[in-house]
Image 1 (spheres, rainbow, N blue to C red):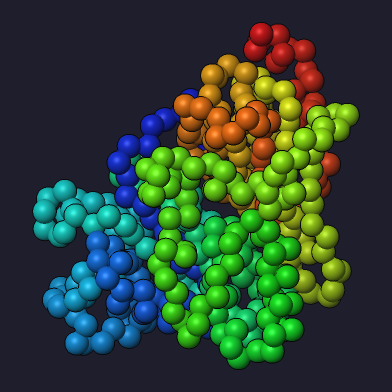
Image 2 (cartoon, helix red, strand yellow; image 1 turned 135 degrees about the horizontal axis):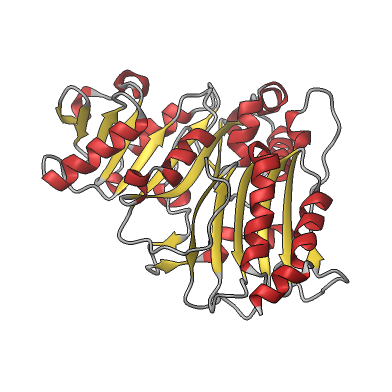
Length: 369
C-alpha cells in the first residue's frame, strides 16, 4: 500500500471520468440510478452494476443486449461486474479501443448498499492500468431522509459513505416533516460540511447536479481547485487573519448521543502561510498514513510547496493517495496551503502539531532553501 504520496506531479491526459454512486440499503440509490439511465444526458455513459435485475430496466427501453451488457434507447450502456471491478473496467476500455462498443465518455459505478466505498476509491486511484485510462470524478451518496438518523446511529458504513462523498443526495424527503428533514441535513453538514446537498424528488435528479464533481471542470476545460476543495465551507473564504503559529483549523461540534458513529468523525481544514519544504510534507504525510491511515477518510489540499513554482493538489482516501497534480498558476491571490481532512478519532491538534514539528525542523528548512 502507498506509504506516502511522492511529490512528483503527473499529467492527467484525456481520461474518462468515473463517478461512484453509493448509499445504504433502502436509501433510494437504485431508484435514482433507474431514472438516470433513461436520461439522454447519459447517452455516452457506461453504468457498472452488480445485476441488471437490481435496477428493473423496462424492456421497451432496451435497444439491444448481450450476456453482460444492455444498451438502452437513451444510448446509455449498462454493464454488469464480471469477476472484479478492475477486470470489468479494463475490459470496457479494451472494447472501447477495439471499437466493439461505442466510445463512452463517462462511467458510473453503483456500489452495494453495505459497501465501504474506500476500497473502490483505492482501486481507481492506484491501479496502474486504470489510472492511465480513468480519473475519479466524485462520490455521490444517497441518504434516506426518513431513516437517516437511525441508520447513521447504527451503521458505521453509512457514516463513511457520507463522509467521503462529493455530493449528498437526499431522498424521500417528501415522507418526513420539514423539521425532521432539517435535522437530517444539519447532521449531514456536520459530518461533511463541503459536499453540496441535492434533494431528489421521487428519485429524480438532473445529472448536472451530481456529476462533474471532481477537480476537472468540463465547462471550463480546466482544473478548478476552488470548486473542488470548497475551503469556504470551513470558514476560510476571504479569511485574512493569521494566528501566531500560522495554522488555522476549523472543527465541527458533535452532540454526544448514545450510539452515534458520526461523533467520531471530524471535518478539519489546516492552513499554512509559508511554503512547505517537500521533504517535510512527505515525512509528515508518511507518518500520518503509517499511524492513522485507516482513519484518514478523505484528504484534499492545495499546497504551496517550496521547491515548486505552482501549487500542488493532493487527494487521498485513507492510506492511498492519488499522484499529486501541479497547477500552472494559483487560482487566486491566496498562496496559503489549505488541507481539508475528514477523519475518524484523530485529534485536530495532532494534525496541526505534527505538521508544525516537521516544518519547524531546521534540516527540512535548509534542504528547501
